[in-house]
Image (cartoon, rainbow, N blue to C red; front, top):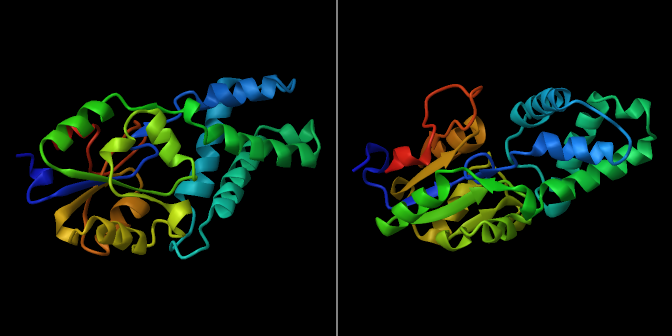
Amino acid sequence: MNLLLHGVKAGLFDAGDTLLAIPGAREILQRYLAERELHREQDRIGAQFEESFRKLYYEKPSDGTELCSPESDRLFWAGLYAHVLYGLGVHDEREEDAIHRWSHELYDLYTSPEQYELFDDVAESLERLKRSGYRLGIVSNFAPTLRTILLHKGILHYFDPVIVSTEVGLEKPNPAIFRLALEQAKLAPEDALYIGDHDKNDIWAPNQIGIRAVKIKRYAHMTGDGITSLRELW
């Protein structure tokens, strides 16, 4: 038996950058801007994405007690996309109302199922874990489209419970969202292992209520201990 799963009855997963991602994010924005006669190189777009995500997402000061709703999720991510557009100098060529409108259009674009792809280890790993008798669940900070995305990718049926921040009004790193998952699954904290990519949201937060957690490092820039593939769970 894999030591990570020793004594565990269930595997709970983050979604974004753990199970799935938008590999063409740069190209999507480049094409979106080009359609509006704004031309930016993909490398510049990628660098700006990294800066905006680092500043506004990964380094976001949060204890998870803030309001969480479909509206608050849209406002946060539209704000991040506006930050990307400003960083790309769009405000020098277009009016403020255009940037506001486009940031919301980008939110809709980046939460639509068609843009997402599963990491190549996901389908096989979920099937093997399920066949081995493990219960699987999701605990994710995500837009209300997550269930549709999981269904579109053919993996929704593996998960029960599916806890989505914008549906339950709680978001990581508030440990309460993990308590809710345990309650719905009728599991004790020691019965579950959580897998995610974010140090505070996915490691610190579940640890606060006694859930063991392991970091998955999907990208070369990610640091610290952890795994690089779900196959390491087998």
